[in-house]
Amino acid sequence: MLPATGALKPGELQTPLHIAPLRAVSPSHFTSLQTCALKEVWAGNGNSPLLPPSPAAHLGSIVHKLLEEAGQGKFATTGAAGIAERWCELLAATEDRLQQRWLDRHLIPLQSSVPQFEVRRLQACKAAGVLNDRRKEHEGSGATVDPAYGFELPLESSDGLIRGRIDAILPSPEGPILQDYKSGAIFEIAGSDELVLKNEYADQLKIYGALYHERTGVWPHRLEVLPVSTAPYEVSFTPAECEELAHAARAAVAKVNDLIATCNGHELEASLANPSPSACCYCPYRPACHAYSSATQPAIGSWPADASGEFRELRLLGNGKRLLLLSSGEAQLAIRGLSSDPQRHPALSFLQEGDEVGAYSLKPAGPGSFAEGPLSVIYRQAKT
Ligand code: SF4
Image 1 (cartoon, rainbow, N blue to C red):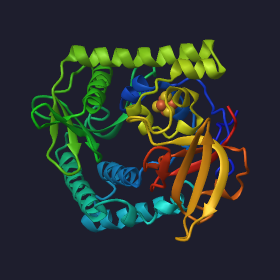
Image 2: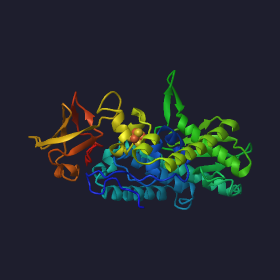
Image 3: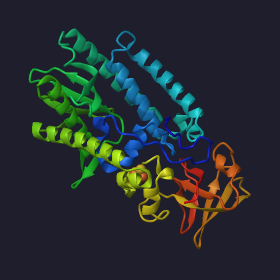
Image 4: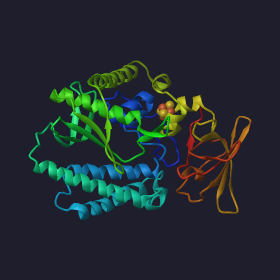
């Protein structure tokens, strides 16, 4: 069975999404699996996102690819010029891909939609240059003892339930150093205005530490996160906590697959789902998630600013924008400032009175009132 795409016709939501057992979890997805298994299962089964990620996330993918290629030695002869050229190629390829997707095409050019685009580009190219130099140094040192040292190395648990790719494993006199490159917001403020690494990133590295030990019989000397824009950050660890996290990751996959083997339909989705404002806020599957829609009413508290109801009216306003009116029980919902570009909100071209409508990632504008935001999406969806 092919994975469901969720939205075969632009603006029309098609459910249910495809669910099948997980083959493995990567260290970078372990926290997310614990937070909401349904989201990870939907993502792991190839269901296309139903909401667009932020344009900064697309840029983050470009940065990661550039660093990955630097780690693989692709710029060994071309240096900074090759890195700059590759950045342009990756950006062009990403924008070509986004142009094909009705959910994302309004976000291009990324140079306009991503804050501090130029700063991020310069930081990424510089980080790739540093990595390129270190790769050359590493090769020149004769210390390569594959598969234990190197760049972009796959690591997998013996049972195959945890699989990932670590950015770099480098030798040092005290022992191996495992490094993971990060381009996003990986720090948070702790109690007294101190910046600390978010737990999920520390846990990823600790799981990699356990996988490395399982494969080589040696514990890493250091675990390091390398942010694109700041100095390396050391993650302290003990072998026991690394093994505990790896055990928890295996157990999480087994538990999810047990549920998938024994339940189905809405019962299965409800068992896997764990709705919360912080988890659902960044989830691209909200339009298809019954657990989410049952857990919240639109725009209450810190839940995402989404609205759903029956289509009543669509008005063209004097400023060229459109106003969408929905009814939800006794309440009237108004969504203002909607683009008139038919490609931006395809559903507005075919909605009819009585259709069930879901509008996502809006900007709250008062009780029962919303406005279009840069990531807003509107779907005609099945009546519940
Ligand atoms: S919307 Fe929330 S509950 Fe539903 S899959 Fe996403 S994170 Fe999980």
